[in-house]
Length: 192
Image (tube, rainbow, N blue to C red; front, side):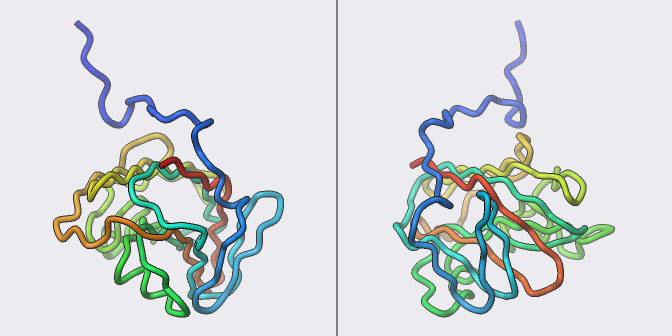
């Protein structure tokens, strides 16, 4: 008999038709310095360090998919999950939510949780699995209860269960840095 597929090659069980496209919805806000500009479906950060977040509603259990491109080697950003209303303080997302890291310092990150796909600072990804700078990548996060699975370019790179169970519901946001390096986003969509 054939062996079952590994987790990294298992098909995605969620149909694209079931997802809502968040970038097309009103309710995005900036917390802290900087801003995001959306043109032709691509969200580009300017300045920072801040947090651009979707205030339309909180999310509990979900599958989130997006595409990102690191315009320069080691361009840094993050996807924030399940944080409370940050008001004017973008650090609320860091301290009370969870961050899926986007950033690949070369030749290797000093801290492995700085690698793309990691849940910073708690769980390092097995590897970044990103394409060279200038090429688009896919990212998928499945969050159910306190369990997280992260796929980069269709490969599972991180699985983690939060032992502290600190954040089971909250908002979604993107990080922007004022470091001269740019991470752009597109096709941000989510399914409950």
